[in-house]
Amino acid sequence: MVSASRRLRGRGALFIFLTTLPALAIITIFTLYPIAFALWSSFSFYDLTNPEKTGFAGITNYAGALQTTGFQHSVEASVVFVIASFFLVVGLALGSALLLNEKFRGVK
Image 1 (cartoon, one colour):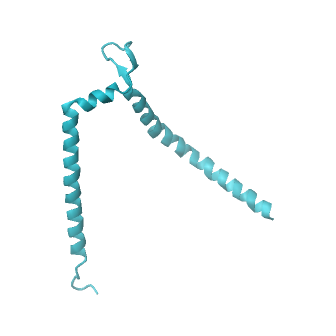
Image 2: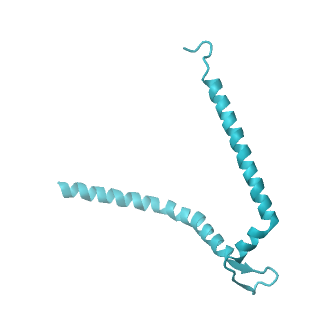
C-alpha cells in the first residue's frame, strides 16, 4: 500500500513538472536569454560603421562609461529622484493611514 501511494506522488510530481515546463521555457527564452546577451554585448566592441570590426573589449566599456560626466550626472539625478520619491510616497502613505485610522461617523 505504501509503494502505491509513493508511485502516485511521483506521478503527481512528474505531472506538475511537465505542465510547468512550457512556462519555464518561456521565462528562460524571454528573460534569461536577453539578460545573458546584454551582458555578453556589454563586454564586446561594435563599430556600426564597420560591422566586421568587432571584438572583445573587456571592462574598457564600463571604465569609459564611469569616467564620463554624463554618467555621473545621471547617477546624481537618479539618487535625488529616489530620495524625493521615497519621502513623497512615505508621506502620502502615512497621511492616508492616519486619515483612515480616524473614527468615521456611522461606523462602529
